[in-house]
Amino acid sequence: MPRRSFADFACSLARTLDVIGDPWTPLILRDIHLGVDTFNEIVRDLGISRALLTARLDLLVREQVVREVPYREHPPRVRYALTERGTQLVPILVALTQWGDRWTGDGEPPLLFTHACGAPLETAVTCTACGEPVGATGIEARPGPGGRHAPGTLVVAERLMGMTD
Amino acid sequence: MPRRSFADFACSLARTLDVIGDPWTPLILRDIHLGVDTFNEIVRDLGISRALLTARLDLLVREQVVREVPYREHPPRVRYALTERGTQLVPILVALTQWGDRWTGDGEPPLLFTHACGAPLETAVTCTACGEPVGATGIEARPGPGGRHAPGTLVVAERLMGMTD
Image (cartoon, rainbow over all chains, first blue to last red; front, side):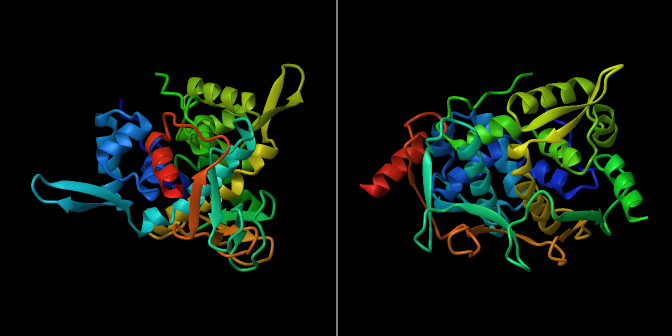
């Protein structure tokens, strides 16, 4: 059951979701990051079907988020590793995990993270210019060079254009 | 076509994905954040089916990520607004958007963000204790009080237990 592609959306969030928006995919990336990085181990960890995992890994390799690393020649076997673009998703996945710790479940985090500085890791999304946390307010959005009056941003584009008139 | 629930996963990322893991949901939250906040506007902006949007909004309201704000009594009409927990997702969605700007599309960002400090917003995920960016390395994960040897963390749990032996 193929789902709607967002490829025609003039929206980088939609394009990101075309790559990692399937609910299994962040879990697959988390597993690979934590070293659960062979096909069979991921199947066993997540209980995902082999067909679905094959499809998800194919997409991730095609989109250069994950790469195959051969570790045996006869018979050929690969493990999976995050590429640079996959690696850049990890902190965002940790932030989503900590949102889940805070707002879902019973307040008992299944995983605890420690940062390299030695402190229990509590993530924040900050502005690289001023270092301050980014809140929902305090962000101004305006149409960029890739903006179009297209599906995915039809009303948003109108609205933002109006605001900048 | 209901998808597998991750409710039995001992994993806060999986629990987060049970709430916002449908690929449409981050786009719906983005729209509401940007003020495209009535049912009909969201339908027109995203081209999402009315049935699917109804289901997604019902879940978001039930999970207290979004709330209904009545704006007319006869006939009754509501707009949608982010709650505190919804608001806390916004910076993470901006980080995902900027990942998409960097790694997908043609390098022309459809939306440009400015931070309250005046600078073009470039997001980073940082550690609140030391203020340094969180990289894929430099995070140590270990089992927390809510950890279980359960689907979603079966192999991860074994691996982390082994590491802390």
